[in-house]
Image 1 (tube, protein in one colour):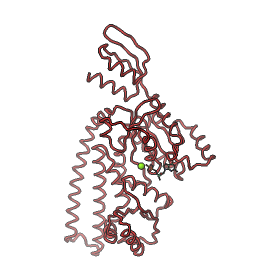
Image 2 (cartoon, rainbow, N blue to C red; image 1 turned 90 degrees about the horizontal axis):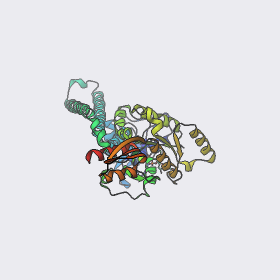
Image 3 (cartoon, rainbow, N blue to C red; image 1 turned 180 degrees about the horizontal axis):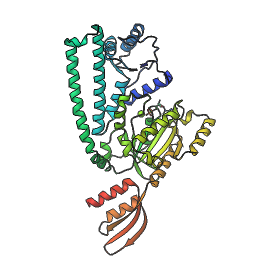
Image 4 (tube, helix red, strand yellow; image 1 turned 60 degrees about the vertical axis):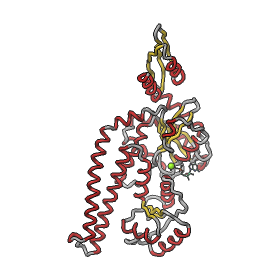
Length: 414
Ligand SMILES: Nc1nc2c(ncn2[C@@H]2O[C@H](COP(=O)(O)OP(=O)(O)O)[C@@H](O)[C@H]2O)c(=O)[nH]1
Ligand SMILES: [Mg+2]
């Protein structure tokens, strides 16, 4: 994996992120390299010497895909694929693959497809200008190449128009999706944060020791969702979400937001931060800005737990500084090492606390004949008051939002 010069951030940090992105779609990264670009070549981006050297490595190690963490023109991409005899994708292509693999809703899928088509279209335009240049700038005079590009472009345009219509109609029925999400009978806790902050490592650390229940619900959940029991005995669903990336290409912003729908639906957000990352503070601001953009501003204090991850890499002084800052925060902050397991118990306790703070009080009337519902309420909620009459029992009960919705369904379907 290689990259072009990028002004603001260190090449090492960018390379780490690119590796993290590739791993997010289950690519097995066998090698990652930083390559200096003295002079970008229009035809291949990289210089001939570099191309030859990599060609040998790619052949010797039977590499199937090479990711270039930069923007490639279609011509550069094609030339590199020919030279190396393997698939080549650039940064935007890689991010689109990730979004495509992770979009969970119809709306998300359409939004990603739209971004992919717009991307393809812009690349057609670019190769068009490339052809124009080859012919000395008279591309508009027509010829087989242009006709093909025009046709491709028209096809893409038609598809884009259709996708936009589909998107509009899916948005109208979005409320229905929300309703079906509510059918998940446990509170949903989503891990959010930058790529490489340690979300997946934490996801595994928190769920690995668990015996995953073979409930039908879980058979249908995808691998980025798992159930987990909190110290209180409460079951939750933990969801590992698409990571934020630095310098997200602007044409991918809508698609990124669409993959974050599950975040809007979640009961708790665990904001995982790499405490050691040089851009950690700027990353935090970015994440919060996006969450606010998703309409969560008013709920942030209620639903966000901040995890300062990679505590094992901090020295004692840094730890103290972090915890002091944390204490001044409105939100719960937990120092964690997903690697060593430090802080995981505290995090689970914090999840219990945040969830019980979200509990709502409600009054329900249950018929004596419905013993199952009565015992369910005692099992899942906190009964504050009880009035028994001849036919029924009236209870004042405190339940978390997911259980309250579950109780409602029980009562409708019984
Ligand atoms: N030292 C240390 N490394 C960690 C910790 N958590 C994650 N990592 C490493 O950070 C990198 C990114 O982790 P990953 O879970 O894939 O991040 P994600 O992109 O947020 O899912 C991996 O190399 C992990 O091994 C931690 O607590 N301590
Ligand atoms: Mg991950």
